[in-house]
Length: 127
Image (cartoon, rainbow, N blue to C red):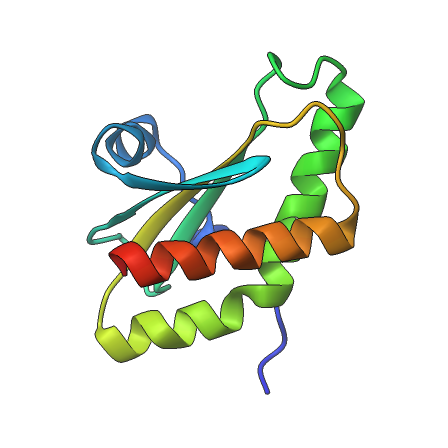
């Protein structure tokens, strides 16, 4: 079994690429997380690239935003293998943007549950 990591080439970066995901992507809402994703060609060998956004509008304190972003990244890192396998089997690449829209920070268990449920729903509908 491969060690779960979250490397630089798996991060969704670049204003143009993120803007394309937001404008042309399809979304799934699993409160308090909104997942916007798009099947597209990516300049990497990874089957998916991902970004996390926690707007100041929902979480005022930077320490809470940073903590929530770390928890979401960790939850994604631990659960990404099954989705990578499904994407590789289909021969596709995806770009995902997780937008946190809650007022209160999550625990790691809650973050894992929300991330996996939102990815499952997105893959069923659009993948």
